[in-house]
Amino acid sequence: MDLINQLLASILPYTEWVMLFLVVGGGLFLSFYSKGVPFKYFGHAIAITAGKYDDEKDPGEVSHFKALSSAVAATVGMGNIAGVAIAIYQGGPGVVFWIWMTALIGMAIKYYSCSLSIMFRGTDSSGAIQGGPMYYIVEGLGKKAKPLAIFFAVAGLFGALPAFTTNQFTQTLMDVIVPGESIFEASELVWKTIIGLVLSVVTSVVIFGGLKKISNVASTMVPFMVVLYLVSVLMIMLFNLSSVPHAFALIFEEAFNLKTAVTGGFWGLVIIGIRRAVFSNEAGVGLAPMFHGQSKTKEPIQEGLVAMLGPFIDTIVVCSLTALTIIVSGAYLEAQDNGIIMTLIAFKKSLFGVGDVLLMIIVSAFALSSLFTYAYYGTKCLNFLIGTKKGRYYNFVYVFSITFAAIASVDLVINLIDLSFALMVIPNMIALFILAPKVNQAAKTYFNNRKNR
Image (cartoon, rainbow, N blue to C red; front, side):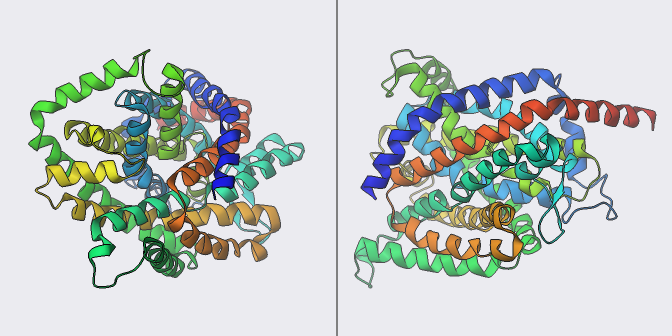
């Protein structure tokens, strides 16, 4: 594992600047190029999600709400709890500002990518309608661009593995349960293996049921887990109300601290913020368009607007609350571990000593929903590469990887995900730049038709 980790760590620096240019530079370009459409029609996006424009006769498998819930189930997960903690651990409170900036431009990226996932849907080897980067690359750019789609799908096989979620969920259970004091004395490795095996079994029950079962479970779990988490962190905010203004001030002060202790200085701080924001909301990566591409709609712009709510929910709202909880509680000054321990400290300190148990319950819901949804992404990538008959075997690899991730080091897991996501960004953002005029043209037609009704 150490050898693999060293290899990944040596490659990552070469991808950082690519991500900075494509995600931040590309996101800023798309934000201006759209003339602010994703932000101006925020209310309309909520109405679409609520089902106001649903038509059962439209092509697709799931409703707007279920598509968003499934995508959010994957993003509102460990990245929002453990990912933010890791970012603050590595870069201090100022990194939160760069997470916010990346999320705002991520809304524009999601708008374009998920509009394209409907506009250029293709068919898999079984003849079923499919959407996502592989399909809008081939259908939108032509057959000559297929190598770009294959590159994306191969990187997606690794990016969709449940490594981070499983690793941090296992760490939470290990810290809260304290196995050494339990009646079943066993080594840490044995406990982690047991947790991994149990997660593998539970995940299998859902993911082998296909998209509809995943979306049904996700649309049930997501509202529950988000509300429970929001109530918990708002309580912590209330108990530390006097510290909240200072926390915001600290975030802005440290965001431009040129003498930051972060490796790489100021740019190192920015890169950490971009990495964690991209992992949190997947803007530019191209995973969410796979779910949104299955939405029941004939209007690409509707799905683009629905999708852009994702970064707002999981990063602007949930990540911000996690960050504020860590800062106002002072947990960021105490943690000596690069992972979810920081958030556990914040909850335990602020919620009468039982916050760690409450967080474990919340994390369980977050982790399971992410495990269910990510399996769909990997299966879809393999379906594109070798066909649907063999593609379903990805689920077996996926389930096996859960146990491996439970015992892996957090550094190895983070480096694997960061590298996979960076590689997926390259073909996806290239396609967005080239096809963006098609989305603008469709948006002009869509909004003109709305005015004339």
